Amino acid sequence: MTVHEQFAEDLAMYALDALEGDAKVSLEKHLDECASCRRDLEQLRGDAALLALSTAGPRPPARAKARLIDSIAKEPRAQQARQRLPWLAILGWTAAAAMLVLVIGVSRQNRRLSSTVAELSGMVERERVSGEEAKRVAEVLHAKDAAPFEILPVSMKTRMPSGKAVYSRDRSGLVFVASDLHPLPAQKAYELWLIPMKGAPIPAGMFKPDARGTAMVMNPPLPQGVEAKAFAITVEPEQGSAAPTSPIMMMSTGG
Amino acid sequence: MSTAAQNPGLNDGGLISAVRAGDQAAMAQLYDRYSQVVYAVAMRVLRDTAAAEDVLQEVFMQLWRNPAAFDSSRGNLAPWLAVIARNRAVDVLRKRRPQDDISEVTLAVLPDMAGDADRAQVAEKVRSVLKDMPPPQRSALEMAYFEGYSHSEIAQKTGEPLGTVKTRIRTGLMLLRRAVEAT
Picture 1: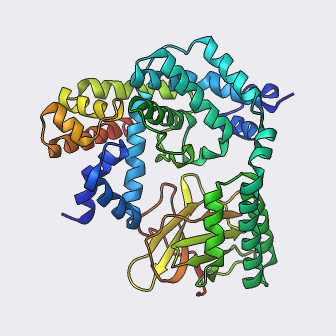
Picture 2 (picture 1 turned 180 degrees about the vertical axis):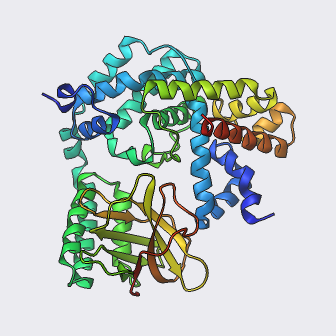
């Protein structure tokens, strides 16, 4: 029995939120380190969602809609933003500023990418990313061991896609931004890989470029304390792969 | 005039974008599309109209407050809202504080269920699989998912060994997956 088979049944229980006790603690520890099981868990949660969708019943009474409309009218978006502004904004802008300063410092030759980072950082604030996440980004970028990885295409093109990964082993944190990425066919996505000093590549996030070819991955789930030799990018099925299934198209030049 | 009011045929992604901008009409449209799904799940778990209405209100208010929590690249809105409704309803049933933030609810991509007909077809298929399941297996799945029982509670209530309960639940989920993949 492999370690994954050992957890297979517990994963199903966990997907239904029905696992408890030592089994739950043990599984959560394994999930922290196993991208393959994390993917299985998402799949099982999708299966469980089918149960929720199988329910049928009448429409809710009209008063329920009136109640909702009344509530959202009392909680308009602008007012909400103002109420949340003080500490969320500070954290968001701290993360954005830290990201901008660091990336400009390590990537003078790539102004386009820095501009993308600034834009994406602003987007982070606008989207009111949770304070905790913003704080974690700032921690990664300020970490003593934070190292930039310049990622370039294996085969050089005239208009080159480029990416930058900032990784902290101590915090198992990773921030990745890319620009000028080529569009992908349907049902395909880029997958970022952490190449450890020893062992197989570790999935480090799926991403698809937007209309301008930019993309970002922030703090994907990664195992603890892995020393990175490099980062690489492949094209994979959009649900992700546990190991690369296509040639590496972009790879970092080192940390 | 709001974006949603100008474009009554907006898809879910368009409506979510409008909600992000504070468009109340877009929120009303999303409610019209999915309130029945959310209410049905809440009723299935709670079997009480007032409590189900509270969950319905809470789910849509969470969406209003944090529309960015829904990632349209990961699938359709209906299953995501249904899962949030189930989770919150079970929290209410078990008299516990909300266990997760809606932004933490992530599902693998399910078959496309953007349209009512697609969703109805999948739901019918799942109901059919559940109906054909051995009763102890269906019961174990329902006790875990709709009644919020833990694996040891299910084993205790059914008198079955813990391992049997776990196996039944995993194979039950696999049956659902295969049936929908074959749809």
